[in-house]
Length: 450
Image (cartoon, rainbow, N blue to C red):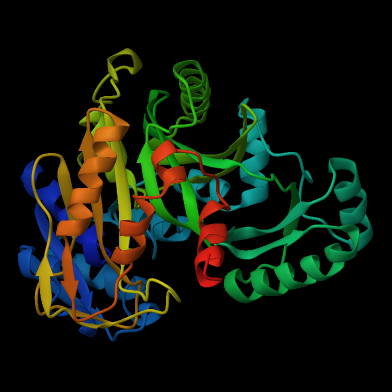
């Protein structure tokens, strides 16, 4: 086991990793920008190192500063959390060159799955169903048009190196395709330094289903069920739940075992999430995230498995915690991402939290690094915290979530709490009858007064 872990992140995920380290008896090092000097993970870590000014490129993305912090403190491993350097293959290689363990997948798998085109090819080779589309990057408008006509409009133009909805455009008709290609390529070049784009069939009302996996890097891998992340705004997840209300036991078992078998063949190491669009009983691979997910607590609540703790243990050479037959899905869990944003316009609302009261009670969990008097800085994401609830059934879970949302108090900044208080009372949400476009259609209707 590791002696000391440097946590190369901030906010709630840094605190989440710190807690897992403490439960394993591992010393912790917090790194922080000058804007995060008063952060909770900095206060609770055994040691802390300031690694630069507020901009991420000068602090949390500053690899020399992180290496220096490891050397100063004698850390022997680095946990990247999510975001920042968590899916940077070169960072993993640099750490290895300095005899530091990257707590995450092998660099080759990060690189492979980071390229969306290669990831799709690999998924197809491993027997994972994929969305119909181009086999690789399209090199001309004529090629794109031929592929689009073959798979049928509408089509989705996607950045090969993309994520988070950037470099992604829909072409509803042949007349839309040229501008969608140009716009997506320009966005992709600006955001990722790579203008390559590819085409996929645009599904009309799919669900977003993701499978959580855990691998030992030696050919052992299991799946831990699915999460439904279909409530999204601008391709960003807002509400996640598991199990999915759209799947039955047979579908759940089939896609889970398909993914687990693929990860065994890949000899995948650590935690990962394989994401699908699901429509009319069919699954279509879209990407794999080679890191811990923001929504990992949903899986933890329904499996009683500490994913971050297992991530650390497996990175240190440990075995899988159980066999596939021993994995049990218990009850239902829902997570709401409470952001410091205007609940109507979604404009970020940084500032000081004047009043803060997290909800409690049986089956209620808050993953947050804020506290009363904490100042949410304007330099990073606007996450206040994640409210996660668990119940024996989905109906009980929804009632518990309604109660917890009404109990939660965050004053001094605007938050998305009013949105969730409305959603949890919506008939479509209560029935589990929604898709990836539902939330944006709902918000448009609210804006129009409907």
